[in-house]
Amino acid sequence: MDAKISETYGHKVRVRACGLCWQGDRLLLVNHQMLREGDFWAPPGGGVEVGESLEEALKREYREETGLFVDAPRFRFGCEFIQPPLHAIELFFEVTQTGGELKAGHDPELQLIAAVKFMTPDEIQRLPAGALHGIFRLARTPDDLRQLSGFYRI
Image 1 (cartoon, rainbow, N blue to C red):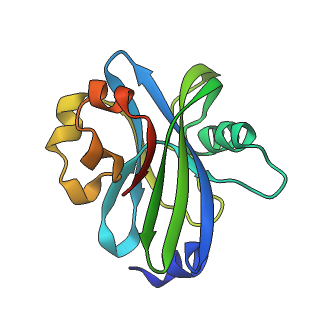
Image 2: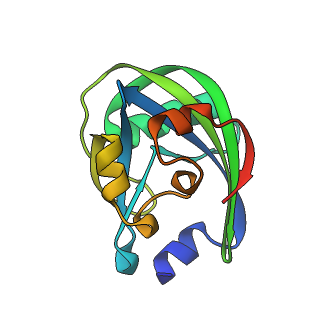
C-alpha cells in the first residue's frame, strides 16, 4: 500500500456514503489511480464529515468526483472493509441523477480520480477482480447488484 494512502485514510474507522447510479444496465464507476497499485473502479462516494448527514455527504461526494447532482438516495446495503491500516464502513444508496455534467472530478485529500464512466456489465466483468471494489465479488451483474441487501464483510 502506498504511504500517502495509509497516512491519509489509515489507522481510523472511516464511514463512507456511496451511491449506485444507473443508466439502464450501465453503472457509474470512478477509476481511482491507487498510486503504485494501479486502477481501482468503484461507485462514487467518500467519507462523511463531522456534522454532515449521510445524504449530504453522498451528494457532496458525487459533485466532487463526477460533476453530477443526485437526489432521492434510497438505502440498499452496507459493507465493512478491513485491511489494516484501512478500515471502512460503507453505506450504499441508490441515487438518481438530477443535473450536472459527467466529468472526472477531484478528491480534496489525494487526487486519485483518473476517469468516470457509466460501464456496461461486460466492461465491468472484463476488469481484473483486483481492479474492482469488493462489492463485485458479491454481485457480478447489474441484477445481482440491485438485489443486494443487508450487511457484508468484503
